[in-house]
Amino acid sequence: MRQIVKWAAAAIAAACISAALPFAVGRADDAAPASPIFGVKIPDGYRDWKLIAVGEETGLDELRSVLGNRAAVKAYQDGAARFPDGTVLVKLAWKRKPVEGLNGAFITGPATTVQVMVKDSAKYASTGGWGFGRFIDGKPVDAAQHETCFACHEAHASDHDFVFTHYAH
Image (tube, rainbow, N blue to C red; front, side):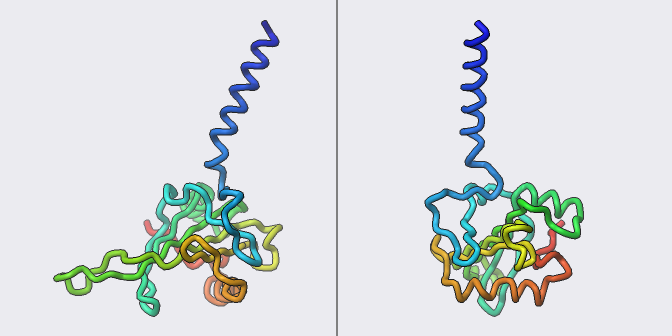
């Protein structure tokens, strides 16, 4: 009888682990393309994450939203000065589409990019602890574009752990 209970417990544990894997922090499909330099992938299930903030990039004529995993949301809610390892932020960008008849009103048009930041202090020590991924149509852009990521974040967001986005309350 004890042997049956042990096997049943092991089977239940295995089933729970298998069911939880797709929801692991920042986990992406192993077959998904990764960004050059950093190896960052678009995380599974990111569209179900919480909204951190929205923005507008007038120079690119884009509307943007930033989503965060649980670690990101907790850090923002706690007012943390630095984000913990395991934090993942995803920025979605779309062209602005004017709403006909409502001067100055816009909705999202065609998608332009998905951008990902992953905090891993050891793996990305040379870039402030952050790895970057920029994707168009689900495919990473070239290495040259990824080489500019940290320099921009360092120049403009070093006082907020290299993250531009502040929490929209």
